[in-house]
Picture 1 (tube, rainbow, N blue to C red):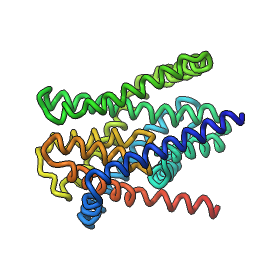
Picture 2 (cartoon, rainbow, N blue to C red):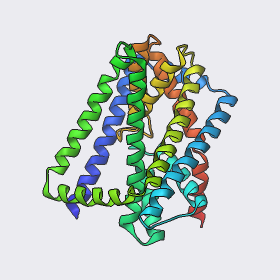
Picture 3 (cartoon, rainbow, N blue to C red):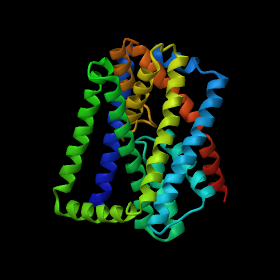
Length: 302
């Protein structure tokens, strides 16, 4: 047990260190100016739009979670799912790693449902399914831009990162315990998705979530003066959001800004513009999940 605790702590510190290194490296490359520009570019209208879009994304994500939770035998109400998801997003936004909120959400659901394995499976399943749908949408977007697109060419580093993650997963599966765990979880997920309606719900909900967050990023990009065709801005948003979902960030910051700078430079917008867009989005996203702080305070007082 002690070894597991040390291992988890080590992984947390490695994640924190990598996220900080990426963020500091990005700031050292482009300077602090783009970050300041991104924050100063925000408008009340943009904040209202971000609040509305995030509310839509949260409702869709909660719908996805409820669908899988019901399939594994730990159902929850719509109201609670939305409240818990807001809380989860807020914690993910203010704590390093970007997954603490999901761990908290799974633990709280497990406590209420008295079934730790099923509650954890529902959270892991809905987040993993969402990421898979996101990767598929990114692939379609890059194909739509065409092989000759500078943005598509610049996406190869992101694909290489995905390959490294896959290699890490294979390394885990190479152990006997890892193989048993994967077989058990895959069997459980096959049962969860055996009902066609569940898969449709997950895909539709995931597309809505991704669309809402991408729209918020496009708004942020326009605020900082990113003048480019809409398809390119959408692709830029998708790639930055995908990089930002890597569990090596500081409340979402780090890989998102680094990737935005890389991809914006590839499109001719300039690395500074990409960082400014990422910073503007980061602040908008934080403001938009502040309702989650209310749920955190409410639970503490209760």
